[in-house]
Each structure stands twice: as C-alpha cells, then as structure tokens.
Image (cartoon, rainbow, N blue to C red; front, side):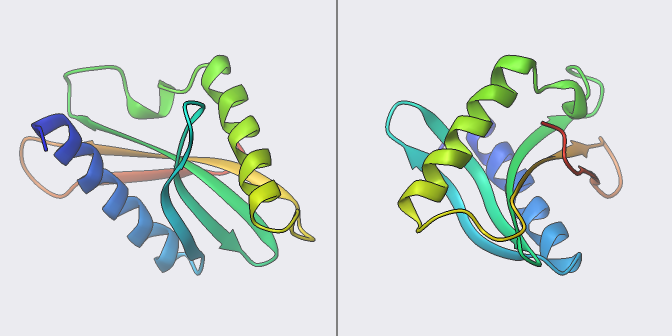
Length: 120
C-alpha cells in the first residue's frame, strides 16, 4: 500500500467512526461495482440509505476536500447508489442520500472531520 492509499484508508476510518458516533450504521465499506467505481461507505441513517464519499487531504496541499466532488463525480455516485440498491434488495423506505465527509490532516493536532449531508 502506498502513502496515498494509506492516507485515504485512514480518512475512511475516521469517517466511519464519525458516522457511527452520529448514530448511523455502517453497512459496507469500499463497495466496488466493476469498472464503474467504488462507494467509500454505505450506511443507514434510520430508514435512509446513505452513500458517503470520503475525501482526505493534508492541510494546505490541495483544494479543501469538501470542494473535491464535481458534478461528474456526483452523477457517478448516484449511479453507484442505484446499483448498490439493485444488488441489495431494493430501495429503503426513507430513500437514498449522498453525503460527503471531508477529512483534513493538519501538520499538528487532531484531524478535522466535516460531514455534509445531501450533497448530490
């Protein structure tokens, strides 16, 4: 595993903890759908299915992670959510929500984890 992969995995672990602390149930992590892509985290928030994209950055090196999901990526996430639902028995009664979690790792101090609900 290279440093970039390790950084991403660490961010996803922090994100999964944040979702669990918010009362959500993490159903799956790193769900792959062939060449179409991957869902970082699939969770349940009450009766809502949450498809969560996680972006992790070191402080000051790149754009803020919360700005790192362009329209094209949002559309891909919606398609992946539909495929996940199809392969797992249908849509939940509360529908589907796409969330974004941004993780910023400062040079010093604790990571900053931001959770934006319903971004796409």
